[in-house]
Amino acid sequence: MYDRIIKINFKLMEQIKKPNNFISYINTDCSPSHLFNNLSMSNRSLMYIHNSESQPRIIAIDKRLLNETNSDEKISQYVDKLNNNEINEMLVLKCVLLLDTYYIAVGLYGGFKIWSFDGNRLLFNIPCKIKVTDKPYAFTVISEYKYNLKIKQFDSIICGDNYGQIFLVTGSGLNWRGRNIHTNDGGLCPTAITSGLNTPNYIFVGFETGEVSILKLKSDGASSEVVCMIPSPANLPCLGMGIIETTTDDNFYLINSYLNGEVRIYKIAQLSLQSNSSPSESFSLISKLGTHLRMINCMLTYKNYFITAGDDCFINIWRLNKDENISLHSSHELKDKLPVGIALNIKEDGIELISSTYDNTHLALIQIDNLN
Image (cartoon, rainbow, N blue to C red; front, side):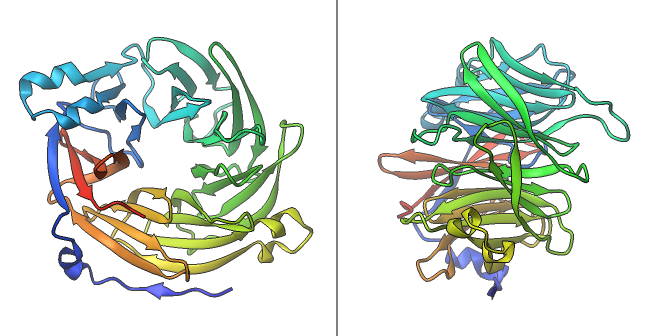
């Protein structure tokens, strides 16, 4: 195992920005809650959680607003407040794409829910099924998952609660089923979860202690086993996770972000996970980066890039090169605005990076080069 430490001079980040990269802002009239990864996107809408009123809401913003003139008269046409009958505070939101259909999946205090994409129909609910003791019951993580290995799309959801339970949810329309496939022995709260299209059977779960469990779903789909455990760096919570897949099926890269502004990149060897080799042979730490001065609020991966947004008001775009070196593609400062969510809008003429910002009503729009 080896690692490389890359130190970034944050004072020079502004000079790294390319001339054709610029930031604009759109007013949405609604401020996102200060939650990690608080922005999710479908082919038609942007969504984030808004807990600042008496009734928690999901704010849905039609993507056509991004192309309109920022006029106060037009905002109401494109901004909707969904699920206004919800009384429980929302913690995590994900627009999940299952078999070409979008759904809204939400983790709340008291349970997990799936709504139709317009927010009008509750399709599935996992209520509180355990005796709550020292902490309120809540669902904290959600991700898409490929349950049927023969298809090339996501067809199910994985989610977890703060008592260490991981659930697999399958179904469509009004026919859904959820089952508990794993329970952490220590009852640790999961803080990040992910899976990839080309990582069959594997689920990656990061916990509040910073440990990451690699779970393998058993053939019956009713349970899973821990095939590998990645240790915690200094007991720091793992707040974000993503996967960069290679052109071969031999290995892929797991990107983890932590409370102290650090990102760690692990190479995962699929063959080692499938064999009887020792757990230490299944992963190797190839790099650790000081990407932000403070906590990383959100992270996403795209092709061989990963994008981080931190409490220091910077959004940074990083490239994982073929030689496993990491380079900084560009850096963008949202002055006096705290990014709490990021999403990529792939357009015909380029790529637009969108960020939700806490304690104000603006979405930040960043035009960037095509990420090839």
